[in-house]
Length: 359
Ligand code: 13P
Ligand code: SF4
Image (cartoon, rainbow, N blue to C red; front, top):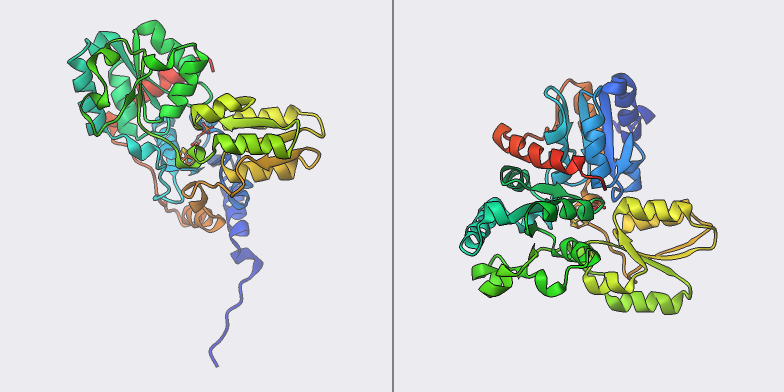
């Protein structure tokens, strides 16, 4: 009879991760985005939204190894901000953000050239990329006097950009750009959409001449799934409900909601709300479910009737995290994130400009 090997408690991923945390102490920092599964986020030394995690990565001075549980652009941002000798490890290399993939350097450079036929871009346009973008686009912004923003500081960064030059070229998320522009009082007709598959982004020359923010035609499929009908249905089903949505939702949904912001904003609001507060929340499902579990004294629901999860955020599992910590125990760095030095230099410039802006 073949021998059946039984797993001991030490073989379980939670024990292997814990053992690595104990062995490496302050030399190992695990960062986790709010959208990660509970089985992963419970090991995070720091959890946060993309802005906080970028700051946490930059501030983890004692760590030799930083394991980033999130999507690729976040781990890449951390790798750009850490010091030489620090290593960022990424448990699931194919956990890409589909929004970030909607703009690439060649296409953005082509758009910049086309805009250059209308205005003197280096004097008239500040390029700003949402942090959900590849490092090469952050470098593009850095090298052209621009910056990066997250959903927490988009308004601060756009105000900074507008004080510098009259036009902002914002990519890749149209909704964050439009929602922020509306909050700043910019009329919708001064925020034309740039469709990269069309000449001049599908715009008339004069619309680009009068534009204040040119918005790249990108979107997040998770947040775009929330619909105005969901807001109306939530208000009918739960009278008195507070509807909160992420700024990646469409303008129509944001307009109908009570408030919109970043993932950290909703956590702060729920933490401060009195018992009995009813919420319909339009953001990734893992976070909403966690908030509902942590606050049974409130009535917390996902805004949409169907579950709404980010597939790539959910790729990271306790097993894939344990594979990386197992590697460290053997002296191996599994899935290190590497950014070419010339790209990192331009991207760092843009990120450092962002970190200086008050959110
Ligand atoms: P936050 O900046 O709120 O963390 O959002 C990142 C993100 O990917 C939202 O979909
Ligand atoms: Fe990207 Fe949307 Fe997933 Fe955020 S929720 S990581 S923007 S696909």
